Length: 144
Image (cartoon, rainbow, N blue to C red; front, side):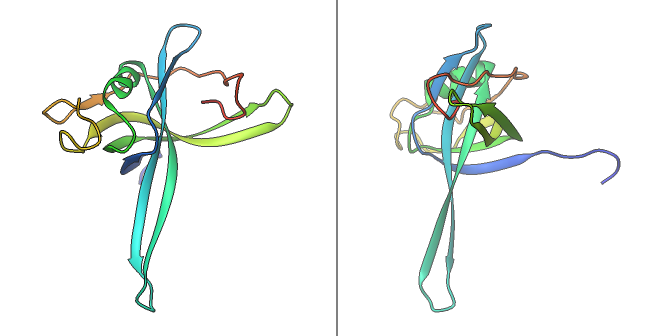
């Protein structure tokens, strides 16, 4: 693959909770939500198996405002973004690390009326602006 590198994540899953919208000290909107993806298979003994993986998703700018307005727990979305590792120190002096997906694009996949009665009729797609760093949340050990 030439000289460059790639940091790209594509997920299709369901929101595990309603998004949380906050603003940085400079007024930049940032939204956080959890996304569940499922893997299903049949084991050699014929039993059905399923594993759910939870992902932390962060959206910035106009995309964050879109997330707050249109996304709710349970709806299915397509997320295109990049992986980001973030480290911070808690009030107790403990170092914590989290892996997040910084969203570049989000597409609502749930049909109108499925988990959210207020979705637009047409498919909604919105891309974000370049994010700025978010300082850790002082109230929680996890910064969102």
